[in-house]
Length: 505
Ligand code: GDG
Image (cartoon, rainbow, N blue to C red):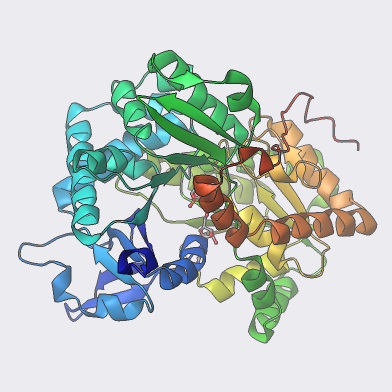
């Protein structure tokens, strides 16, 4: 048999961050830590099975003369597959990462155009760094490989690889929303970004809305692209024809390792810790928010809704305890530093108005918790309060439900989180801009009968269990190779067409 034919194809994952973290310890030595998260869990088996490589930045700023060859420990931190670092200088981090990625694409794609800083030097650096990533991919991969590029920091990698004459299949998954044309059009580099996306063979989004927005932009901006509008707008996976090539786009809502979270919740240490959290607030219901420090997460709006709730429903004083965990993120960017101050001011204001000697309404934490602590919080709380102004998916909502093993909890969820598309029947959906409506949702969650809570939570958990991270991975990879696209069921879709404040009291 031809040796070439028996060769197993490799899979290459390319993301801004590697599944490991390099850190400088106090003694000046570089230490390697394993990264965590659903994507890493999901990718590990397939990377091991397919002799894979993960290419990305290890979270450490390049110092002259240092490259990843100096860190043999990197390789021992992951087992069964290889990692390859792309080292970045502090200038690159400033212009490519904090600049183009997080001060242009992140706000633009989430619809916060007033926060975009369209500086040409950011664009130059973005192109250079994407080229650097592409070069690392090119130098470390043989044909036939499937290359899977992740997220908004690396949109140009596919196009750059084509310039290096890579003809092998390349996929792209966008972890954040794709904006509508009237937002996207404001980007001075709209044509370059969209054309680059069409160099991929398959492009995945979390929601049908993102896919439609993308198709809408292609139709207006890339004139020669041929699209069957009906299919493109309604079907899970559809095709675009452009320059003699076929590009597939599809809807693949990302998920979590359901079994891992659910099992972890049964852990004795988690049980003890969650009991302790509960005992600290006897006879009260715990409301929990877990968000990265980000203006898209709607933390000030959530605090305002909680204030409205306490102002208008005084009988719940001392009966509710709101724990808000804010995870530090991107503090170098002014918009994030300002947001932190705003949150702290609101927390102070609410506690100042309502707290008593034996009751603190808001417990605010600004730090990273370890996994045990986080899962204990999920287990301890009665109501998850997740109200982003815009979110690609929101994994916290899924993690909370997976950990709700007694099935008594309630999920309050923003209709602008991608997760709302999956959970609209069983979560209490809110419009986070509607402060009163969101406050009334807390009231409704408080008063929801046990039987109804059980039923809704069971449905939510079943949904996540059936569509876990492994399902997501398989759907994307199948869509890349499947001949008959009609085998993908149509997307179950939610559109907010009725007032959300109508929350029976
Ligand atoms: C982007 C998109 C999309 C949080 N606090 C701690 C901690 N976390 C973990 C959670 C969860 C993750 O961080 C947050 O994920 P999200 O999905 O909620 O949000 P983003 O970080 O904005 O992620 C988002 C996602 O990509 C995937 O495609 O859903 O829309 O914006 O996993 O558990 N983990 C630990 N300690 C903490 O204190 N260990």
